[in-house]
Length: 426
Image (cartoon, rainbow, N blue to C red; front, side):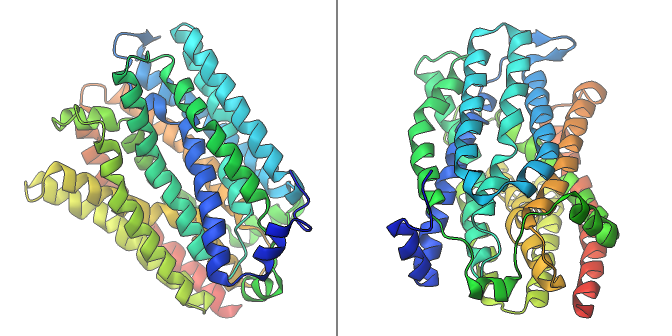
């Protein structure tokens, strides 16, 4: 979009204090990804109760279709994001979002079968957006703060854009047109934020010294990394599969879960429950910036993720025994979920690369995990829709909470031990 090396804002950011740089970078990255969600999640605020697709209800078919496109996008992103040169990132973001909005317009005008195809096309470009945005931020001394701030975008945005979607439905916009209208409202914000993001300077010498150099990885380098560290990566991918599937189910069927809990007439709940979660996660992960030792930082990251996974099961147990009300339960399982989930996209792999003292890119590792996890998310949803159709969304979500807790605590313990041993040798 512009020559970042000569723009006066870029030059000012290169000389700015870490605090000022972080404030600017977090603001533009947060806003970019927040606005992206207006093209992905608003449809989930509607029920689409009067239509079907094949043997599925239309809402489930739409969720599965978009997730399938998103999962394919993550697989393609392993190569696409890992090899993208910095000067192409901003224009790539604009083109991807334009694609997503065109798909939402098709969603508005097509019959049910066409709507399912349109949401697949909508998910296809959006899965690569996170990696491009995070590429502007990784490999810096302040990566924990930057990543935590960016991660708050999807914690807050999913609920916020569903609240906007619900408000548009209440204002008379049809369920078909509501997603496209929501995206159009946020498009100017997205474009301004992307321009601001394009002005962020690359990591300086001090960043490279503290966190190792981040370079695009070709096919041979990606394969070599996977061959070297596959045992620990397998455990992390399994855990991420559970967390991603759990997050997507909670996210996509929040309207149905709240209806089962008797609170479906309050659109603001989509946002209200996510605000304390986002703030808590940002504070906890941001504090990791104070830890200068990369190995200790990696250890504490695993502790945070393990505690988050345990919180999901403990909160669900308290809810089942009537010890906490529904809103407290949804906030608690959401907080536990995001304490385990958010580090994957910002802190975990950044600290892993730094602790292992290797030249690589965190975006590659993020997308390897995403590629498998979103495919698993589709599988879980198909299993619920076809294999557990007789139970409610709420009941399935409760059972899923216990399974996620057990699987994630175990896998975090194994993978943490593996990578910390390798970090000690490094």
